[in-house]
Length: 255
Image (cartoon, rainbow, N blue to C red; front, side):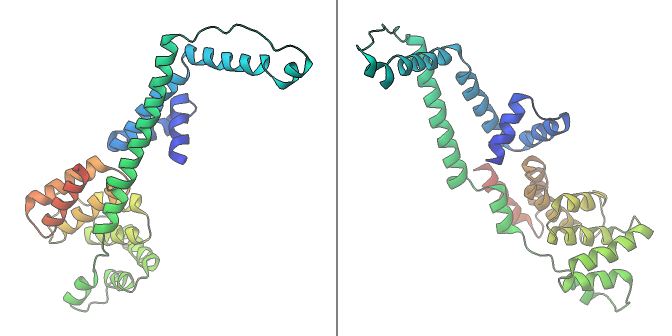
């Protein structure tokens, strides 16, 4: 219902410039959403057609002339009705076809095509930062403490510690990576995307492929299918740890 209302407001021109830009940005990366906008526009164009309003006026006239009050008061009215034009019937048929097509698209989208959210839920798993903690010598650094909080499921506490680290060293890319992971666990994928992208694309670290994987998942979660597909494609071609899963996701998105 919210999507329908948003599309109607977009087509009616009642959204702010910022809201319109958000809708157009979403449509550029979400094929289903883009098709729904086109479908709504076609239906609205049919509804606004003058012939449709002519039919409505004729129906209103029938209701008025053949109302029970008039019939009870005397002879039945004998108003001659204008024949409905072939063009009007064609427009009505077109409208019905569009409505049927809308129902078909919705059935395909909801029941047959795996949504980005369903794909995300299937492939997302919590990253095990404890591996880093256990493999490194015990230093009791601020980053170690943040990782320990993350490992214990205290994600907000981990974020607080990571924010302190990054306020003093913005180029601590390992802290950025941990921050992105913690933001994913606090259901803030938009901020997680920002954290992951603060890390250079050419991050010469064994954790670089993990950053790419979780960045692609965060983009998928936020319905940026095109951008996420590009990264999943790079992961698949790199033939690394996530290559097989990236191929499966790309197949699901393209089905």
